[in-house]
Image 1 (cartoon, rainbow, N blue to C red):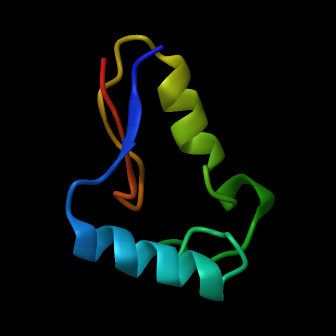
Image 2: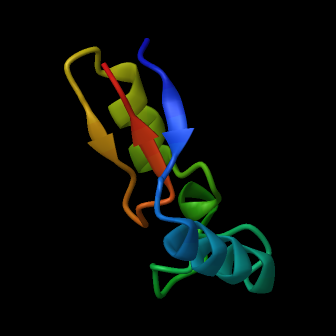
Length: 66
């Protein structure tokens, strides 16, 4: 598994964390509140499990390095 880190852009991190706080830990980039959108979302967990994936999660908070 690759390394998971926060986005290097502090403004993005601050905005997303503020949104997560306001939405009870659910992705602020999604319109619906569903269990699969609780941070770290199911979509990114699946991407993390893929050894060939490298990139950001949906909201750009986390980055997975190979």
